[in-house]
Image (cartoon, rainbow over all chains, first blue to last red; front, side, top):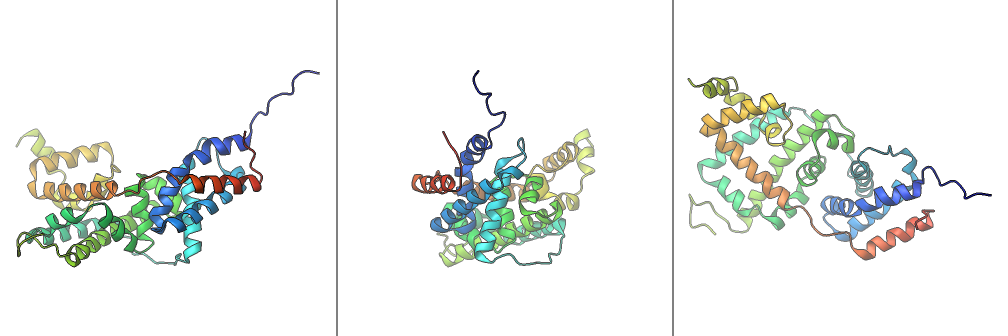
Length: 196
Length: 89
């Protein structure tokens, strides 16, 4: 008898090679969603168990990170019961224009400079945690994880137009929260009293 | 009017404002991106808006959580996967 023929395709090896190697990315994504290391670990563990059980549905050659992010987000939403059926007014261009209008107002008294001064790591992380869903996930996927609108729409399971609306609104909310943080921390604009 | 100014004139400020985020996210067609870039070369007002939002997005991206998945978590997950039937070398 000759040697047994090698397995033409070993799904376990494929899972290890493709899915397990993305664990750093999934963990980082989970930490952004949960803003808590312990919760993030729970999300990651549940994500990988679900991914393993449904590995047969993954189309090799497609983006495994995108697939895992989809699972992770669903795990997160179920665990926090944050999935709400929101009827969003989809006007992404309107949101873009609103951001510029806000900047025009902020520029008058130097608030825009204040925002960039305070917009550093921990402040942004804390403010992002306060951005409500469904806007927060859109900001995390596009602005932190560098997904395209198309990729984010796959993860979120919504049309690209909805991604754009949520993303643009999320950015505006984030800016407002950062500004509140700045004022609470005693930062002032250079146009006013002495700045911090 | 120079060629650039003519080209930039086809994108007005109102259009740019409505496509600002799409532009910064690299989601526009190359032709539209070029048109907006031309407009920004000649319009200081629009340039300041784009510049501000670009800096904001850079700051948000820089705040990305760093660090690899903890080894203890990795080991726990691998153990759970093995219990679920994953075979590894």
